[in-house]
Image (cartoon, rainbow, N blue to C red):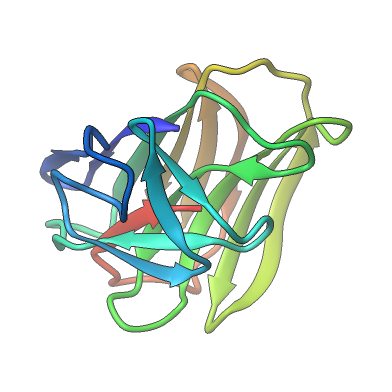
Length: 167
């Protein structure tokens, strides 16, 4: 995965253009679940199913669009952006593109680490692909390469969080 574009009143970007090590160099990242690192200018997570990293700068709004470019997805793994990420807890919305025999798309909410699926659809896709999650008010929509593929789905539980991230 490389170069997520994350916005919510402002646009911030990450290149992951650095030596093999922790996330960065353009933004400040916190590994919330699992261990994240840069390998060959792409980010990689050690925890297969529930890895999550939060990006440091707060955005201007909790109406957010988070996007990343998935270059590869491990067999039976998934990748995606997160919106409304809490600055202090494992709470956020996430879009998941699952690979291999389970070519599925998911929108989930994670509240204090507890995962609840909001919506799911089966869809075969190929990488590289751009995965985007838009959270606007109570509406959450997953896009692949700028085409809406799941949602809008409605959920109102997570509000006010001004950070985004990756899963």
